[in-house]
Image (cartoon, rainbow, N blue to C red; front, side, top):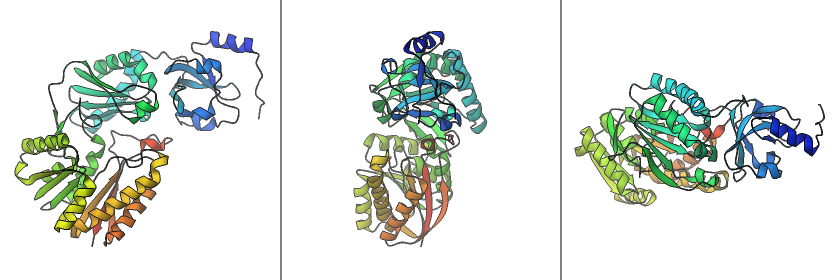
Length: 413
């Protein structure tokens, strides 16, 4: 291996001036191979954080080099974040402007236009679509942008202009909420940047109509990632009594009714979400087969068990119980508890659908927790199907975090 070349402070300063961007460098023992093979992140303990690097504004652009001063690409730097650098482009001379965003968005749009007949989908899935920390969900003529990284906030005007130019949307909402922005040191705010939002937006999906609150709802207002899992569960629901726990705006339950379910009971802690679910049931023509129960999901499961309730299909789609590794053990216990409480509610020969959106809980750990819970609930089951996020949420193979969603379908004895 070639030894790192020593440069004087004057030579390093001259190098900084001669490039379009400042240079940041991996520590000598940091693994550059993963970056070369497509891993998009550099963690804080892998980068040399000298005074020049520390002086960079959050979201600044820089040329990343390995420990031997070989260029790796153009990154964005935020010394306030544990993910201190994110790869933007292998071409370090590229200009990050509206045209650059238009190229990335056009590629993302081409995939979604091939997948979906109507413009309701996740348009940009962050690193997987070459736009680190940026999520964009599309609801017809409305797009909701989540700029979850400092560089996205700094380049938001160019991003929005490109988004309008490429897709033709007339309204753009900035959803600046969530855990990711806090980790980047960004404030929380939700703004309508262009156009206007008159109220919840009707979204056709899996034969039902959903309503998304894009300015005040959870995340961007609707979970497009579960679309194929809604459809699979619905295929089991013809003539069934369905229990949809953590229902949000009716994701699984409305799809089941569209497929011929006899009834759906939707449970959620949010009265506002359940009101949107009821609106969707009304618009879909299912109101007479749809009912709701507002309150804590664990308490509702316990109460239904005490009542002796039974359903042919039970679905539990909770929020991320393990959003990061420190919460993993507690999260797995919560998933096990959900399975334990839900399993007794499934009629003999019925189906139990258990979901996790926690990237820290891998598939094997989640499946084991669910199996333990089903057993502790006094039931045995077959695992029929394992589902993941829809293709508008592509996974970057080098970044496990982009493959966060798991859906397990069991048939219980």
